[in-house]
Image (tube, rainbow, N blue to C red; front, side, top):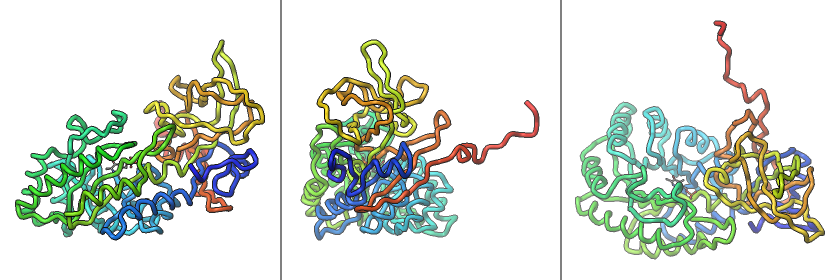
Length: 419
Ligand SMILES: *Cc1c(COP(=O)(O)O)cnc(C)c1O
């Protein structure tokens, strides 16, 4: 969060005060630091050194065109999970040959679109998906580059909802299934085997689960190549964590250096699919206190952003630090819940926090909101989605306009037939 600092008591993103942005665009809004995106991306690059690699940013973590364009300019590719994300990635200027396509539920239409665009590879997650992809490739008249996603069955020691590499999770193929899939794909003239892929979970704050998974992958690579199949790419997935509170995750550079060490004897391009570790601490959600109130002993700050704008606290009980945009001179802190305007008990951004005594009209900054923030936003309670702003040094740009009430009903019609 180095790019969000107080200056003379006001919270800044790089060289722009969040108060100034709030005045210009209203609240709530997401604010992203381009310098942070750049720093984190460069840290990944440094970790790889001279090693052949491809850094595919996980678009689902933040799919704003300006964010994608910024990373693309630095050399990033994309890890996509839908046709819509492919559309965004291409629109943002990402090169198709740097795009990998993950996800358990790719449709025929999405496969055809990705084939025609010429993406780097499909990370196939089931035998039925492989069969359909072969059929679509034949129809399109283009061989599909594939990797199989294997489930290495390692425990990433993270929240159960964001752990994906255990046998009980829906993702990937078991070792036995994978061997069968490689054999089958090698005889299919519409499939071209490129690599192997895994992704064990998210918000992982230690290197050891990544190393465990990688060793299992290497083992499997040995077996696959033993069958006479050559792999040119190893995709180690994403999942590196960030500091929300007191976590001390390894830096991207240290994590990748370790992986590169593990890969010393492998003459293959390494693909990594980071999302959160690039954009998580690049963004904040700025919200305004509408009301304060007390119910018995409990104090509430009712703010204009809700669970539809930032779902992580309700969904995963995630912790986001809350900072006042304008620091107070007083030291007195009180315990308060920061809650949104939505008609749900689960609509909170923070619970039982020590916060300064604030009044309505004060701005709060919800930290570490750059990943899985806006991309998970919805229109629940018919709330227009908020604007997104990107800061470059001492300038800021609105990179997504706040939705209007008109936007909310776009595409809806009332049938002529009376009810
Ligand atoms: C979500 C996801 C990622 C990115 O995960 P982060 O934890 O944000 O780094 C990468 N690869 C796949 C397949 C994913 O589903």
